[in-house]
Amino acid sequence: MNGKTEGDIQSGAVPDHVPPHLVKHFDFRTGLADRPQEIIARLHEGPPIFYSPVRHTMGSGAGMWVITRASDIRAVMSAPEVFSSSIQGEFLAAIGETIRLTPLDADPPLHGRFRALLNPLFTPKRMVELETLIRARCAALINRFEHRRSCEFIAEFATQFPTGVFIDLMGLPGERLDLFVGWAREFIHGETAERRIAAVRQIVDYFRALYLMRDGYGDDSILAYLLGRSEGVSLTEDEFCSLAFLLFSAGLDTVVSSLGFIFRFLAENEHPQSRLRADRKHIPRHVEEMMRLFAPVTPQRIATRDTVLSGVAIRKGDCLALSLAAASRDPAEFPDAGSFHAERNPNPHFAFGYGPHRCIGAQLARRNIAIAVEEWLTRLPPFRLAPDQQIVATGGSVLSLDGLSLVWG
Ligand code: HEM
Picture 1 (cartoon, rainbow, N blue to C red):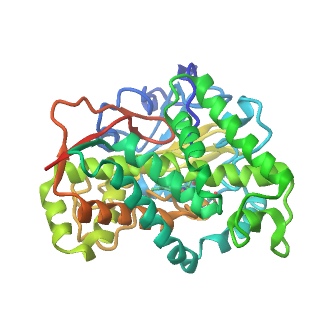
Picture 2: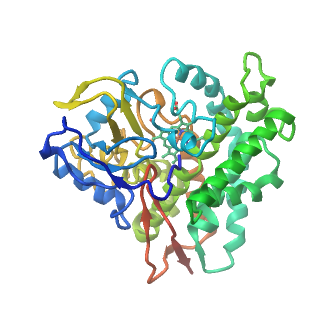
């Protein structure tokens, strides 16, 4: 999901059809300080839909409509024929890659075809099978710093954990882990656009080689399935690489980001941490509420025709930024929306999206995060933020923390 490149934050002209009172300069990449979801939640004090002239993506013309209200987000995400996802994988085309982010950037009927292909890979049974491996990955990472009294959580844990899960999920051999961790680090935190693009190329090239060799993965693995060992699955090289790249990228910075915000919250708040230490059964509810408070993704859509959304005229070709962080803190749907309530039930937040593109990896992500919390609480004494650190958040399509130092003991 990472599409950040340097030089793509610009202000575009405001189109004529945008009423001046709906223009507000809002940038999801900068100026969100270290608590981006709190700043975004304040958007509810203004108009629910406004036009930000900041150009957020490569390729698209001017700025974007920012959609903040839960009911509007539901309406947009349920209408792919009016609000297309084709804008989502733009950065790949912009850097000259021929793969796409299918099904994330596809509309019906293509979306349905690829989604149906992926669905059997994310069954509850498969998730249970993966759990032992995930727990072992988690434990191995904690082993590395457990004897110390501190760690750099994002670099030493959060970035490495989902990469290990990806290796297991895909059926890649364990010795590939360091390679993928290196690419993941560059893909998310590479200092320059060139380095991040180079990481994308290396990952895609790796999958291209796999496609040609048809070797180097487990027989009963996702890769074996995608490479045609299952009846009815026949993908071109680009289709295969698109799916493999999406599975890598969609479950990477989203998980890193969620882990970062969630572990900061636990480090800052003694009560939930001690409650979970006393009784692990509360972990899933806590994770759900923390996912709501720290929803990291801002998906985009492009209007396929002129339409009206909650009284606002949207023109064909207009881009929309769907703030799932704002929707998940919409006071119209979540009482005391800015506060943590572990008992919130139901908790229909938007962290995993809504409608046909709703995250296919949501159950896996929830389990990963719950296992991470559980293993940390089991292995380490109460942890807190290292003093005097300057926490920096970055925005874009995925909000995240650049670093997080934790201490214990
Ligand atoms: C906490 C972690 C995660 C968050 C917050 C998250 C969030 C999201 C969101 C909001 C969407 C919808 C995007 C849209 O409508 O444009 C999405 C789609 C998707 N996610 Fe996740 N995700 C997470 C983890 C994962 C994992 C672990 C995987 C798989 C390994 C995954 C795979 C996907 C895929 C394949 C899609 C596209 C689905 C489609 O277009 O039909 N995600 N995710």
